[in-house]
Length: 217
Image (spheres, rainbow, N blue to C red):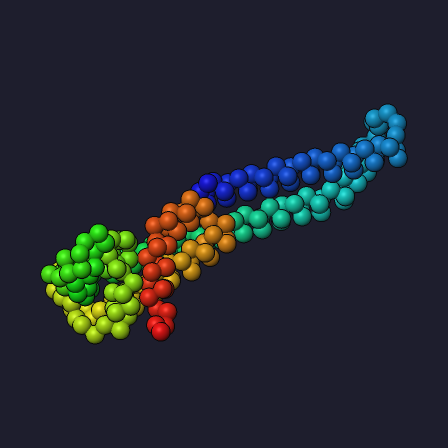
C-alpha cells in the first residue's frame, strides 16, 4: 500500500464518517423537533421560519465543526505525505552514498577464500568493499576490522585516492543513517514494502560494519 493510496483511504474514511455522523445528527435533531411539536405540516411562514431557525441554530455549529475537522485532517495528511517524501529522499541519498562506498577498492591482502587452501588467493591485494560486506566466501570479519584502522591509500577507478579507514567510516555512517531514517519512515506509517526492501537489501552490510566496530580483545 503506497503512501498516496493510504492517504486517499484515510481521507475517504474521514469523509464517510463525517457524512454518516451529519446524517445521523440531522435525523436526531429533526425527530426531536417533531416529537415535541408534532402535528400536521404548517402553512404558516412564521412556523417554517421558526423551524429553520431551530435547525440552523442547532446544526449550524455542528456542521461548521465537521468542516473544520475535515480541513484539519486534510492538512494533517498533506503534512504527513510531505514528511514521508522527505524521508524517502534522505533514504535515497544514504543508499547512494553506501553503494558508492561499496564500489570503492579497499585493502584485502591475501584473503582466505572458503573451500580453498590457505594462500590460494595470495595474489589478491585489494577488493571492492562490496565483497567484504556481502560475500560469505571470504573471511570478511578480519579484513573489515583491519579497514577500521587502515592507513593505506587506494587509488580508485576514477583516479581519486581514498584511505581505507575513511572508506570504512563513510560506509558505516551511510548504513546507520539509512536505517535510522528507515525506522522513522516506518514509524510514520510509510509503505511496508519499501521498509522490507531496504531491510533485506542492506541489513547484512550494516550488521557487518557495526560488528567490525566492536572493540577487539
